[in-house]
Image (cartoon, rainbow, N blue to C red):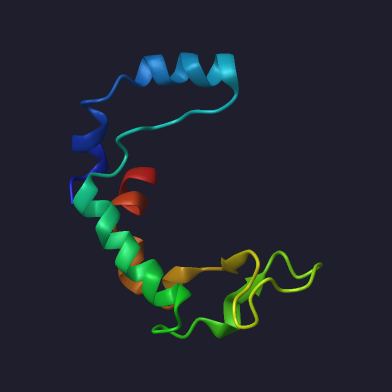
Length: 98
């Protein structure tokens, strides 16, 4: 994956700062490339569908209402996915967001 230093040098950081100061949020449209999105999609599909057992840190943020589907959370949250897939710590999103 491209390092954060290589990646950030090509970006309009000053415009980002101004936009964040003006709007209170920042939207990065090309933070990940399409192949990098597929990298995360595969991992998260495995976590969400139970191929990787994350039961210990999996919670339903919508548990205050009845489940819409019997065996699925209303709003699934998996805390600390890198506990189950350590390669996430060196993935492109983590490296660039560091």
